[in-house]
Length: 334
Image (cartoon, rainbow, N blue to C red; front, side, top):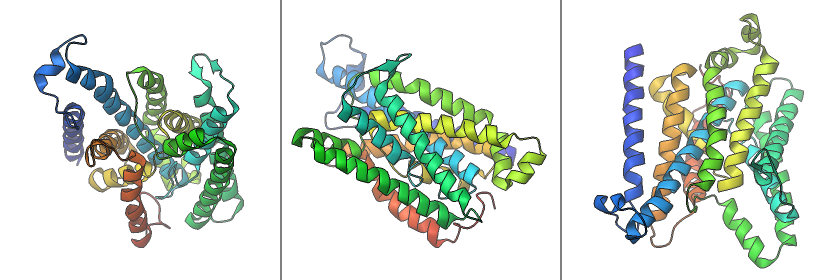
């Protein structure tokens, strides 16, 4: 069994490398392999490759990996297969924080972290704490309660985003609408460099908590009896997932359903043990979003579809499938 899981992880790693290597070559403008080796500004196709496509592929992989592993952590902590940053309102909270920062227009940074990212992180934390608090106040901690709380928080923050749009001029309002669809229209590696530390810290933290996640999926009482400091572990998970989701949303906009689809697809092939599921989800989530973004920028080229639209088209039926298969009231590892 261990050899089989190791083999699957190796295959997934190879698949991820192939996707990362090949995706920058796909696009409206064909880029021959020989062109990418040319330095300087001599070849326009080399500039397209290194300044636009490679940063975009790296950014989409990091965002997909962060959203996927955050969804996996939420599903384990809430013991609920439908718990994701999108369904719990975390993305909406982060989007509101970033939109509010843009509207206020006060520029600041703390320890090199942009104010937009800090604002998104703060409101992502607030939203997840609201959902968690509302869910805990109802006996039974059911899926229905969690989903209703998540939908309520989503609507709450979305209404404030619409209010901010109404106060904005036409140009600013259009930019906000386009940003809310999610996308990786970046130039150069600066946004990626700002984003990678959050992904690295958050993902490494979750990797170190895989044993605790396994116990949390069974129940708080058992986890407590095995020595898990539940309050501390949940607080750490809340912080690192909100940091990853908040930074991703602040830079690339809200991109939904990656945190739901990737963990479930990986769980079908590699099982519920988070020591194997965490790296599989990280790799598959990143590669999957790279493929979605590649499809989004090539299917109607030279125009492109916001990648958030693609993930929503795929995620909606997947969400319904999860509901119809009757798993919404079962444990993640049942």
